Length: 157
Image 1 (cartoon, one colour):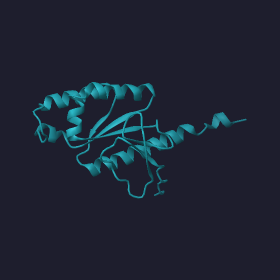
Image 2 (cartoon, rainbow, N blue to C red):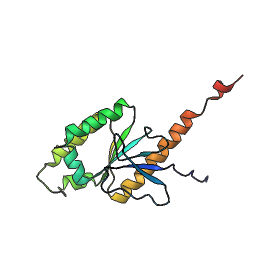
Image 3 (cartoon, one colour):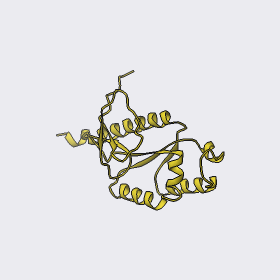
Image 4 (cartoon, rainbow, N blue to C red):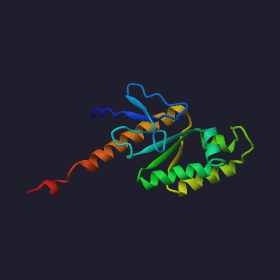
């Protein structure tokens, strides 16, 4: 099995209140236009929005309009945005959160974000969400690297 190339430095947004740790990886804090995490070498290759379950419930209810403006900014820049939630759908259905927001409101708000073209993944835990972020960032790096290579036809004489 070929060894993985090291992931370029990860940017963490200055507004991120509880950033993930990335052992063995270089990180840099910067102000990002959208999302909480990106690749320093290719910040528009992918933006990742980290949410605790409580944050997500707020996002799809009281802060929905603000978040959809963030989605629109990322879309205008042609930057894919992905939401990773540190919780499960089962947590939502069992109302394992504070407040009186009905689970249907949370799931309906989630559907509206997905309908806007933003993948949303309930990862279960903080560690699982962080690991999924690393996988997605590595995939984005491979994609932009592959796209940057000229095709054999482009260099043929």
